Image 1 (cartoon, rainbow, N blue to C red):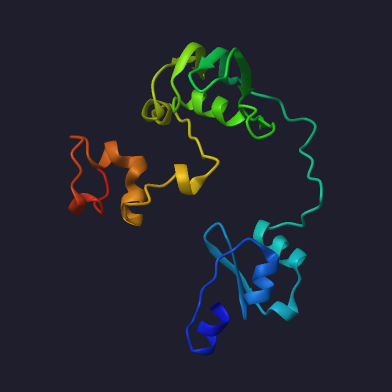
Image 2: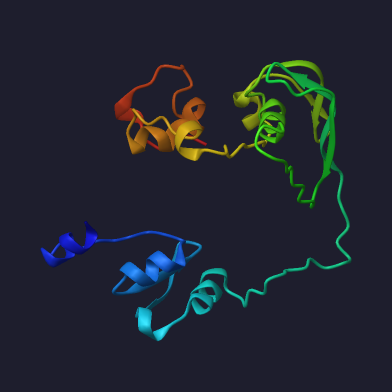
Length: 195
């Protein structure tokens, strides 16, 4: 379809992180990093490794090791005996500032449900979640105010309101600032909130 459109003179901007597609479809490849233009190259004048290096700003090896002298900070998240209606039970977890902790397991193992329960997206039946020493109870709105965010597994199904416009989706995270009265006014969507 894209080749047909191209033959008819249609210009296409194709955004992807899949290198094979970029090289297969692109006449020119533009690399952005942190919202800034890094380079524009022709597919036959570069390689996937070269593009990755430009994207991240350094040479990327198969294994990246963090420095050995990194000291973990204070406890940022402390979960004790957490159980939820989603089926997780007696979860204990503690994450310190400066740590990256991964939850892994097979499909159906409960890793997603643990994250959702911690964030308040699934109803907790017992246990305790503490964020930087403050006990957390409530839903995603309260979690967000405490500095917690959840990027769902399926961004399309769980991270967007697909029946709403792009503009509406962009302001979702700031609804309470833009509409403190809790009444949505479409005309106010583009007005920056008062500090």
